[in-house]
Length: 235
Length: 262
Image 1: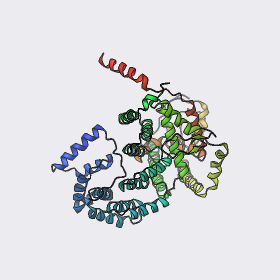
Image 2: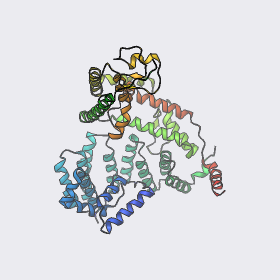
Image 3: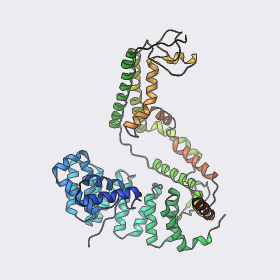
């Protein structure tokens, strides 16, 4: 069984209710043969949800049809990127490679394309090469958030959870206001049953978004598990 | 003295509107030129980290009442302690003795940023480029307005003004008996200069180089910003009174629900 790649936007963004409804509507519309594939793809991209099979199917359709492709104009390249990522998620590596090749031809020295190449290496399973590619990028620009996150995702995919935690902590030391990263760290700690640390992360999340009920609930659960509420003073 | 001057509609057609149109076009041109000329600045790691620290400290202040007392105090110490060796209560990192909180800026360092600003060639070049792109079009347009559109009354301001404004607003008009509300085209130019900012943020999106006045304010506090904002955050964090909201929450929920039902 091939490895599944974890993604940069690893925490699923919490999609608002209205957008969810629109997404489902567009999905049904496209599934049943009505047009609107391009709007669907744009919405998926905007909301950062993970619908890789559909994206792959409809995106590939658009890309293979030269008329539709020329209609897209400049957006064509964003679509290539989206389809490449979806293809890697569904393990269709040759499709991904084609898309990346097309992007490489157009943008030879681009960091974004280089990142996609790194992701392709990850999907193929050549961790060392991917690691080398990412380290090169980080040498050029040590403040590239996405590459840091990819490194964490890679460590996680390889099963090296403590490595992932270490990388993530280092990342958070610089970018401490990034709540997706805190969320990911909390989930990792919970999977390792390190509840005290997970509680800390949830507190951070509550501080950034006190109106999100999810974080309060999760914090409550973790407190219940560790019985930390018993030791809290109410002053 | 108080009579109404009738202004030719040709003034409106050939002075006011063309002037506005020209200024909008120049603004758009400047935006694209500045986009082309902008070198991608590699953000300094320290500045990024400081920015993030400030955001985190601000969040802590805003939502302090949602976390229990101990965690709040732990974070407060993490941010603002001074020269005290304390065990780092932050389990996210390996336990280390930290000497200074993240927001604490020792006196010596505060002076550096400004010196740094002038000695760093990159930053100086950048600022010069930005200045040039701002000053040259302004000067050129102003000269053009003065050359072509001077010597006549261009518009009437709807509210009365005192005599003090005469020298400012009526520059080309050499009659001292004309009401101050009647202004020359130079004042229309200045009006447009400051007023078109809103229009530009509509057409060009948020990031546009025409935000002159804002940038002028920013320039003065460039290198100083990080240390000042850090100490400002530290001070406001010191002030915060913490009161955990949880004990009172049930009563709050009850009162809200009661209001709902009644």
